[in-house]
Image (cartoon, rainbow, N blue to C red; front, side, top):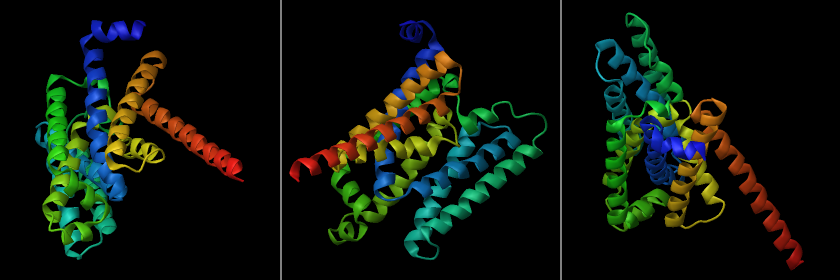
Amino acid sequence: MDFIQEIFAYRFLGYAALATLLSGIACGIVGTYIVSRKLVFMSGGITHASFGGIGIAYYFGFAPLVGALLFAVAAAVGIETFSRRGKVSEDAATGILWSIGMSIGIIFIFLTPGYAPNLMSFLFGNILLVNRTDLIGLGIMDGILLLLFAACYRAILYTAFDREFAASQRLPVGAIGHTMMILIAITIVLTIKTMGIVLLMSLLTLPTVIAGMLTRNYKQLTIGSCIGGTVSVLVGLYISYVGNIPIGAAAIAVLSAAFCLVKAGVYIGRKARAISRG
């Protein structure tokens, strides 16, 4: 009860709670596309490649998230372009950009005079540092994603599961692919403060994997992913508040526990149905 009261009493805690809702929606929508298209490794590559932009931003003295955004979008477009042209496989392009981004970030951070005070918050997240500008950015991102999925649901669905069939239906597969990759990159950068570079990939994938054990309907999968991501981060925020531990780690622990419970429940349900039929 004290936790709920303090959400309304302290602005930074209220901002954190609102950020969990907005991050859960964004990660749920793009996470469903990522898992459906089997782009989990790619999302990790974009996330870690953004660290190069953070390092360069620190060195030249401008906003770290701006540098992260430029690197993340460039990595996303590069992966999509190289893989579509067949010159480099998607996995290879992701691995290359992942390592290049991390190495550039480390080099420029070490070259920067003094100490980078907020570096740990980018690596592991610190949702308590979320400000009004971050919330506005997440809100706009959620609005864009919801409008895009409402307007192009069929094209996104077909592109996510079968790009060749989507192309045979004369759907703009290339435009959808590049657009989704850019939106994935932007979502990753906007939610770095919530989960951090190291743990963000779990928030993009685990809620969808859990929801996928309960439904195969893409729309229901997306809704379930949004709810699962939001609830896990909110519970993680409460655990962080009570136990004084990092919220990102707490949220992933909640998702991991939920995965095990749902997996066990599905297994027991299947066994029970098999016994009743036998």
